[in-house]
Image 1 (cartoon, rainbow, N blue to C red):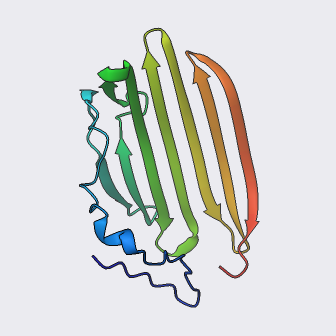
Image 2 (cartoon, rainbow, N blue to C red):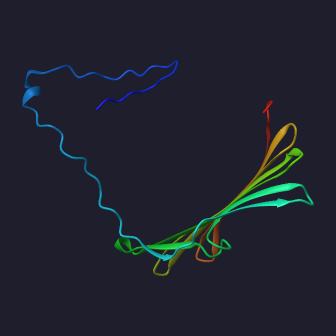
Image 3 (cartoon, one colour):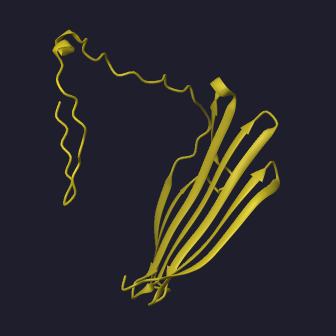
Length: 165
């Protein structure tokens, strides 16, 4: 087996073990080992949906990619070996007006949940990115919940210079 590493202008310096008289007596490597696959039961699968909308009145195109229905209805799977249910849903939306690149907007909404017996947590993330001629405008929120009680929240509202981008 041959490994080739393309380093570009850099270099890769690896240590080299000097040969030894006892090397011929060494046993060859055995087959690769890995952990057994997890036994996962899909309790509530949700297929991924993709759509492209063209609004002729607003001259705008919207590409939407989603999983998990209305985001409150996450796909859910059970890992019986550790008695854990895990779920997630997402919405990714990209929109742009045909004649104005500054109308571009991305939106990402994600929800991840885990539960075991009477313990239940979830994390919800919302981000938005737009641009002006001089800046990228990023807004985002992340919320963490234990049960129905919010235990953490963080908000971002940042202006990032485009620096000719």
